[in-house]
Length: 295
Ligand code: NAD
Image (cartoon, helix red, strand yellow):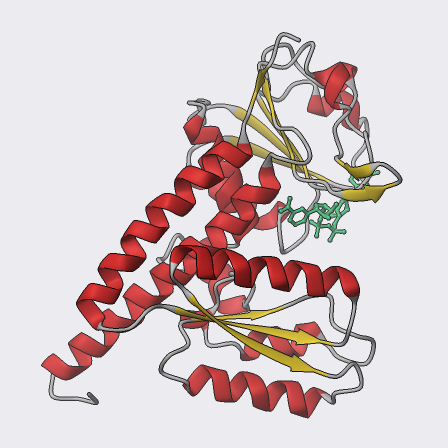
């Protein structure tokens, strides 16, 4: 193995410790902990596991988790009214609507109802617009985690050729925007891209966010490139990434494993986003007070 193995678990542990210390400071200053509301609709076991994990992560760093559940046959109006209530709740700084939603509910309609200042997943159109224009706002967790990993391993981004495979609103698009913000030359690839392997092989930074086990083979990777594997597919013997790890590790300069790469960073970044939202909201309140507005 030539490549440096990017240790997402270790990096995430450092990030969580940092957040825990800053949450304690926030509590000191404001007299309350940051709060994250999770909304789980239906009983998809995978989603339930994710939500439980996020709540556990919160408790570990001193963020208050608020658990909200609706049955699988909940109506669009019921979910909307819950979101509206959480938008108005003082103790809630972040709202996480767990996706995918059960059939019959439209995440394209419901997600935009989340107050952008509480949009810790960074998935509302307002958050996406803020990112696209380089305005301050909450960024999606997985892309932020990817950038943090690249930074932690001192991967040069300015002027680098970055290829992102996958163009979802959750990962590919926001990650491309963040890489562009960091002055990389970004190419977005997707299911209709021609000669994808050859394109990928020109990248200094290659990110796979597809969901196809071991799509990225050794010949897709430029020697010395940093390879980030976002993909997660549940296989017979555990989680499998989009990158053929053993083969790619022989040529890449650095590569993330699955599990233990991007996944833990994504979770840590959700905590950081919740803290950021809490700080921004308490500042809004302070400036409201100073101008004689609402307390
Ligand atoms: P998505 O399903 O919304 O999008 C997949 C993208 O891959 C599409 O843009 C499509 O154009 C592209 N694609 C499909 N087949 C392709 C092919 N053969 N060649 C090139 N491109 C192809 O996916 P998503 O929500 O962005 O998630 C992608 C993967 O990342 C999934 O495996 C998901 O489970 C995983 N994921 C992991 C984390 C994490 O924390 N590690 C977070 C989010 C998503």
